[in-house]
Image (cartoon, rainbow, N blue to C red):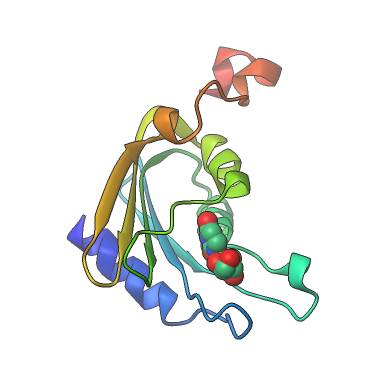
Length: 134
Ligand code: THU
């Protein structure tokens, strides 16, 4: 987990967040052990901004990987900013129920939660593709 934290902080430092002033970094570990990172990228047309998790997922898929085992996000503030609803669904596409999400802050607060608890009763690829989606 320390390596994921360092990777997420490095990504957070690249955040483009002039409007919210809330930089976020995300790091994903896959079954191969590789780590992929992303940061939030805001836009003057506000809804067009993208979350850190979305950037990390895009990097993972671009590298040919699809199986998330662990995710770490880092935000400022006293309380970890947990993944937004849209990002929970985006992560769910590639993360099994036992995947662990560590929501952290730069000051060291940590909230660990499983994918199943982060997005209960969720819809996923197996509904459309059957079990071969896993
Ligand atoms: N943000 C993320 O990057 N990930 C989340 O899961 C929650 C929110 C970003 C979006 C926006 O740039 C800023 O945090 C404030 O909402």
